[in-house]
Image 1 (cartoon, helix red, strand yellow):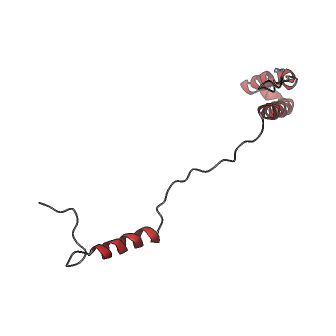
Image 2: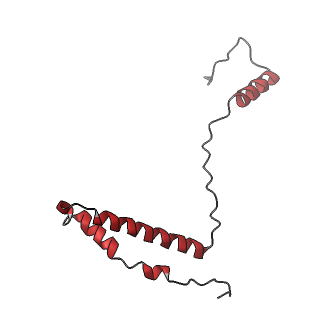
Length: 107
């Protein structure tokens, strides 16, 4: 019957020697465990997250409007110009005026 591994020495290790080698092997170098990065918990309320998202959308829309205004004449009829015009023409001010319910009977 074939054996899996050959012994390192002439005779087999005792239980104490085997245990000492095991401990030394596991204490010397920790195994590379892929730890998932922890993201900080978002403690904002839903209405606050909504206001932040709408503010970000309005800011992005203003940035795209500036980009459209600075677009050279040679690109005015391009797909980029059409996409920028579609973004600028969106009426996002209605989103800013939405009053969200507070929930749980606090309306």
